[in-house]
Length: 130
Image (cartoon, rainbow, N blue to C red):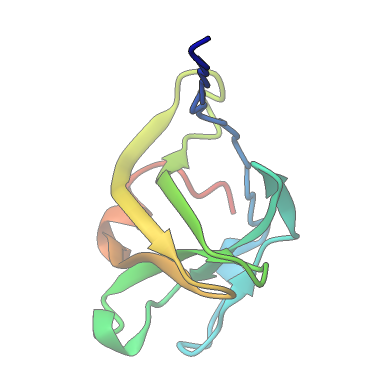
């Protein structure tokens, strides 16, 4: 009698959203300042967002910088995006959205945009409530 076997593997996509609100943005004065979100879990992994209001050195201090950091000691493939949220239009107020193509995160590493949005465009966007 012939032995017949079969198997199926289903790939799935896990989606998550994390709203990182920065109250008192106008009080930030130091150019080397970084703000990190609380840890959040998506897809069974711990993540954090790092935001540099005056950018990183690569941004020549003319742009804000934002990065997604994997906080686990594992490798993960992920797609992600960042956008500004207009406080006057919380349900539809996405502005200046930037998408990242698939990225392979190494353990405890980050990826994102050294030049997310210019400081002048951020000030003009209406997204800064304070």
